[in-house]
Length: 153
Picture 1 (cartoon, rainbow, N blue to C red):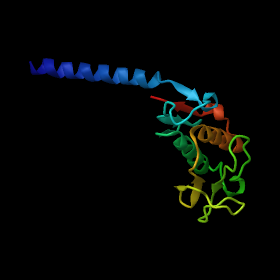
Picture 2 (picture 1 turned 60 degrees about the vertical axis):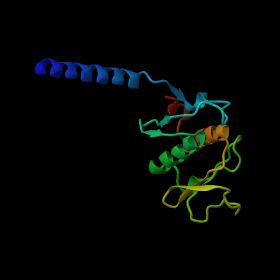
Picture 3 (picture 1 turned 120 degrees about the vertical axis):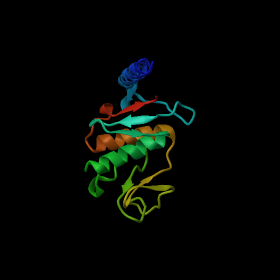
Picture 4 (picture 1 turned 90 degrees about the vertical axis):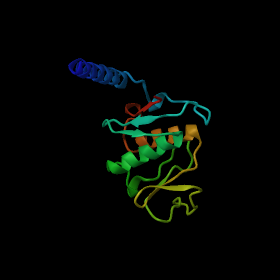
């Protein structure tokens, strides 16, 4: 009887891990470039995956922008020299590499957030601006935004 229970447990574990692996590989990932028209009532993102396979759990659309900025800083793509960009849809997107937490014009960030030691990003964005800002940061740093994907599961 004990052997039967042991074999049954092993079979259940194998089935569980098999189906878990199938589920993980069949998840729907949407390229960042295909995300349009989101707002605070839209389905929320759960994860963002970058071109190198690095995946970060997110809860809100602003987290997509934060995670993108952090990934670019961590990979040496975003530095003080190229922290400001002009994006047609997102005015004054800027990442501050100083404790002043202000735009180059001298205007203070409305809602700064420290994403790394001494690295701040404006945290006052609506959903679609967060997506557009993430795309803009990637393009500005010569990364293809279509290689960055978002999962809703």
